[in-house]
Length: 367
Length: 260
Image (cartoon, rainbow over all chains, first blue to last red; front, side):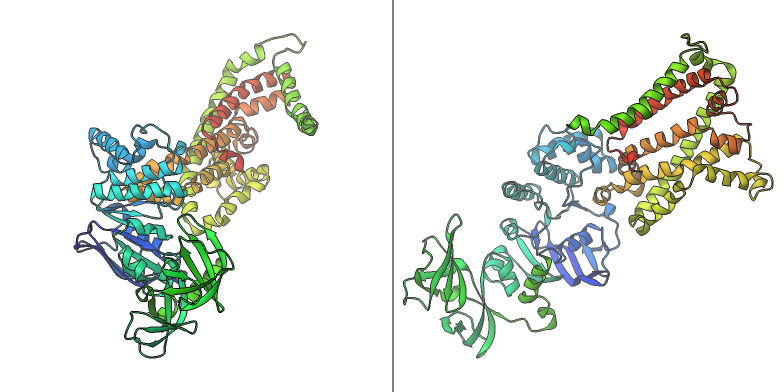
């Protein structure tokens, strides 16, 4: 687990490209020995954050402090960090061993030291014996691991990984996730990792959900999943039902003109709120037994459970259950009070910028 | 069917390349009476011919080297500049290539002659002027393949090198230069071969005082009317060209040189 000493501080970082703001007064503390994941859709500023850390992009304002030293203006080749690039970026004119040795040769290490390091690194990434292979002959996953090996032989204090699994297929991605966790534990260095999908949750000590240059929420994977701070986080991490609700009074919320007991207090009376309910938390019961009645409109088997849509008086509820309720079944839905997440609606301009409607609108535009 | 479609191509190859080459080979290997002889080939070893060949080799090597020395940094600048990415700068450099090269060489003749703007240099009718002409005429053939090879280098490779601690010079020598080699080899071939065989440049800027092997061959076909000797010497030159092409084919697998 991460220690509590801060290794890197990013303070007030702003960056814009051609007038478009990518990072806006961004603050981030990275602790020693932490596996921190920057998570967000493309264009959220996570890659820019990583490039500022690596020294490839200069922030317009703000400072990057590494162990008390200001490294904002330090060029990339002097920084005690190494990057694993999204496109692997292995040197095509060198073989595997030469690629791994690149950084070591520059720092003037002895050939015997370099050879030991190459062997050690290849073993670490499970590619022992690949020294003389041409990098162009390797598969994507293998190239990825060579890129990691090339970075870690330099014994960086921090390893920056820019969507390292993005180009891999699902199976490889899962394997590499476990490898990364193992590497992090064996090497005892800080990993900063970006990803655009929720699966990155599993391996992180800390997850930073980003959108439009702002941090939406920062916390452990459990916190992010179970207590999303706003509708964007809830929607981005896992499946969720997001409803417009009204907080009638403490511990009572109205969703689709039905009152649900909940555990939240202090929102005031008759206050409009966002309500998030995870599909697996919805209890499906016989008609009349739950709070809200409806009809199953679709049913898809997705492995461990069935994913069903229930139409309840015009509102659609996404439910997951290990029991199957065929399309057309009349059911009644209920939710345990502690599984109802109440969130304030975005109000200020900054918050407005991250509201879900806008996010969805953007996605539609991109498509 | 497939064979039928390739018929025009085969016809042109036959009529435009193979048959003329056969004719050159026939003339080169026979004397005026039509009897076989190796004399026309061996004539290259005679004093005047050898001297011209050596001078041709020397001047074209110098011209190739100069082109490379100019083109490499130029390609680096073009690669980094915004303009280079939009292709405008490279367009400017290629622009003269679309003008007839005899005209371009003539322009230098006018500039360099005694009463010309650059007459004070006094290099007209010397090998220096011929090299200048070669560099000027063939520089685009070096810039383009080198530039093409260079822009293919992914920026992230250069960033990766910096990330691993490389200095600017190391990035240049260990990453950019080796990855530009195919383009450099193409460029070398494409400057060297026409420089080696040119006669127009040496005619115009050498004023008959700089005799290259190209001039000798030309004279055999025109003033001396000795087609056999001209063909024999041409066959010798062809050996050099084939060597250059083989050299290029070995290094330039991506065909940067074919992108002009």
